Amino acid sequence: MITDPLMDLTVALIRQLPPEPAHRLTVELIARFGFFLPPAPKDDPRLAVRALGLDFPNPVGLAAGFDKNARAFRGMLKLGLGHVECGTVTPRPQPGNPRPRLYRLSEDRGMINRMGFDNQGMAWIAERLARRRTRRKGIVGINIGANKDSADRIADYRAAFARLSPLADYVAVNVSSPNTPGLRLLQQRDELRALLESLVEMRGPARVPLLLKIAPDLEAPQLDDIAEVALASGIEGLIVTNTTLARPATLKSRYAAESGGLSGKPLLEPSTRILAEMRRRVGSKLVLVGVGGIASGEDAYRKIRAGATLVQLYTALVYQGAGLVTRLKRELLGCLARDGYASVADAVGADVKS
View (cartoon, helix red, strand yellow):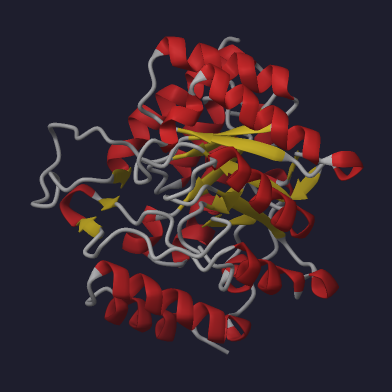
């Protein structure tokens, strides 16, 4: 059994490493020794969420980018997360962009990455996920993308969806990473319509839930187009948002000028604003997943009141460690009680008029 003091010491030692080696080592340790982690306390029923045809024990999930190759999801679920999203996964393996490509902005409680969909490819990851079939515990989503050198990106999404969707509880379509040149063009109306209609057509009777992950760097007309296409396509939800290319003037870190996507605390405000804007456009017709800058129960609650049924985090775990998950859920319960809500579902979209 791995005790809390031992876990805290391990996290402290890992933080002394550069960001990417620290991440690789963390995933390796969780993949190999996650079985020995103590199970998280059972969730309060007020945190339970029914969404996407699935029963989530709580709304707090792990965003894509941490467990790219579906190696550590079992251990991460044991920490008390309500779901884990693996990936981004591409049809063919790819190494990603040249190193260094990951930076801690410690003073800003943020990170910048330009990883570039580094992953071992859908065949390898499908093999790992197939082992889950006989002991399927917890909700695991798969985030899919296109290879950087692909001549037909929609064909890439179709290939990844065909291979991985039977093994996932939901599939997230990533067209919003800033680190694959030209990928965000798939958020444009005609391209997005072609992509989503193609994937929805492939689902068949199984109807695995489909979600679209969008960028925070969008203007009102682009949000209008995405909302219209998403509503018409037959997908179930939107993940709002990916990392941002913006660089707020408030950033203090010496790495602030590095290229790539910015995540963490500096993303909280802009991503929550986009979340509320999408809630106004789609109402309750689509499930919204709020991502970006969540580091406390109050942050998660803001996302929920802005329209999110589910939330995801990643960067805050780098700074606060695994204990954040239990603490965040406890704080979220406090927010619900303070405002007189009996459940998470009662608070969804409270601050937004459709």
